[in-house]
Length: 122
Image (cartoon, rainbow, N blue to C red; front, side, top):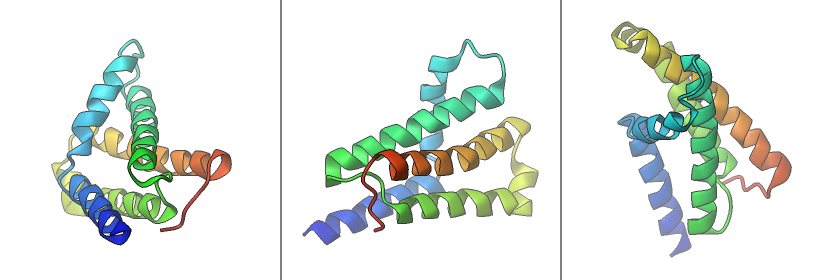
């Protein structure tokens, strides 16, 4: 039964990434840093807080922090989206900065979870 929940968790994570549903939540978290004038720094801090909170939510649901495989999948989804020529042509400058902030924040949160918490691979 635990395997079904883990697969379901990964599916929800991938679907939210493909359809960019998480960007709404990151935007809401970034509002807390509205006093920062630099858009990139504000989104970077919002992304770091969001991915850390997502790792804590995963801990609450499954009993362990967001696994390394999930961080790798998240990073690869964002990185391939960033490298896509069609996507880059359709994105505004603000969208590109948001995507770059996510690409940088995901490994930072992964290293934090690896260094200071237990780390599961799958």
